[in-house]
Image (cartoon, rainbow, N blue to C red; front, side):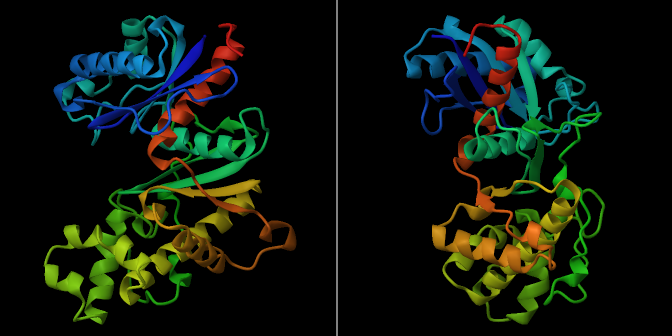
Amino acid sequence: MKVVAGVDLGGTAINYTLVNGQEQFLIEGLCEHPALSKHGPDVCLQQIEDGLRIAVEKAGIPLSDVVAVGLDTPGPASATGVLSARGSTNFVHPDWAGFDIPGNLEKKLGKPVNYLNDGNAGALWGHFTIFGASSRATSISVVIGTGLGGGVIIDGNVLKGRMGFGGELGHVLIPYQAITGIEGLKPECNCGRTGDLEALCSLTAIEKSLLPYFLPRYPDHGLGRLGDLHKASKLVRGLAESGDPMCTEIFRVQAHAMGLFFDEMVNTFDPDALIIGGGALETKEEFQRWFIAETRAGMPTQRREQADIPIYVMPNGDTAGARGAAIEALKLARQSGLGIG
């Protein structure tokens, strides 16, 4: 059986999946191995190989059945997977600067390696679950976590851009002043911009901007008594899901920010679907439906032809990166005549 491996390399953990030519995944759920990225490239690449051997053993196939590998990582990196010479939050060891991850992994494994950044890989998985691998549809995906990632799939293909920064959706500026209830707020992003999507719609935004803005309005709130915004920010989602008024209001602001952003994407790409993923929506279905409804409520009035564009919650959030990387590598393996599918 010829298969393609998907490898999602994070700062501390590597997630694996395997897919065959019939687009069937051979591993359900998480299959993780420690990344040890802080120890530098040599140690981390050995970890990737060791973890891949564990993954194929779990699937009950020999390593020789893997004909190609799809790899995704956080950035900043070029379109071909060369990490920025200025370093990376997830890859702090100095030897990572300017390191060609897929090229060196290809040499180590003796198999072709295709690269995507983690946002694009997640977006591709969300697109695949809705439309399949051969669709020519267009979709916009956002992944709300500590920051905000995402990707744009046009006619079934990942938009990478000239330098690999295509789909950096978190840093698109939005007219946040249109959101009611945040008068006077100036949401600043870690990138230096004021009012981009990540500055309002991320865990960092909750800690840096939204909690400091709303807590004075709720002086007796338990999160204020914690005295630690970092810890408090991680509790907001759960409290919002349980109906806490302040935390629900914070998520309403985030949903309306998402609505403004989606309006810009609709008018730019006229997509077939909009997809939201990430930890912010790892909640019960009722809260997901509420968030999507509030996202629509935050979108300016649209033409009739645009108003029916569906908004989906991305499935398999924890494995989306590895699965998206595998799907892209499977497509390229077919084109390269590796005899799969």
